[in-house]
Length: 262
Image 1 (cartoon, rainbow, N blue to C red):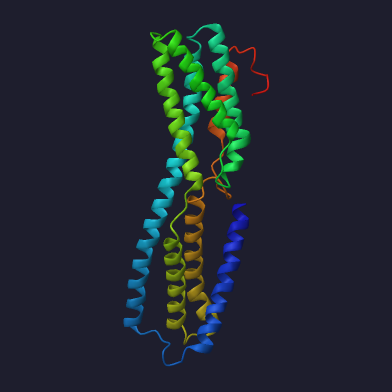
Image 2 (image 1 turned 135 degrees about the vertical axis):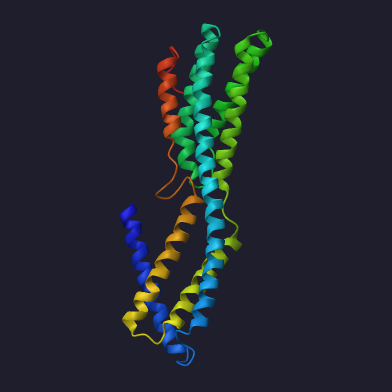
């Protein structure tokens, strides 16, 4: 997949470069073209400003991507921790909570994760989360002094917050103005570079401009990848939840583990 993306960026960069060379060559007067030192200084200044914008947007997208991955890990860890706390309850409560944790993990992995690519959530995961809360609520009414109950409720709260953050990340995207600035600024820099190299032979122009096109396209691609954490070639996979599901299934002696979920 990475090789295909690299080839696609290269092809688009070549086509974009050739298009600019053709358009500038036919529509910009020859006396405007040139390599004056002051023109290159202006180009460098514009390039620095644009790189600052790119850096800010990329850092924003990367921070969101890493935060989403961290929340997914916290959610999976909470599932594992709840299964450990469940062993401190009676056999019936332990088995019921263990089964509900298994149902929740399966719903997240098999149903909710694919849906998040379209910004949707799973009703099965929501139902499993509600059943967990109801089960712990019944325990609170029947045995309010159980030390494991407080810890379990805290873990359930963390699980709910982590899931909410994960779902919110699947619905978020960069403001449209960011994409306008990235696209317009990139095209402006490529066009400026083409004008400055306009007196060179065509092969010289191509050599000058192609690296600019490829660098800008690669950066915009990275921004697009990081601001869509649940789709695309570098999407976050439910690996942590899959590990938690295996751990819960092995740890909790649940005779209902293989039963279908409600």
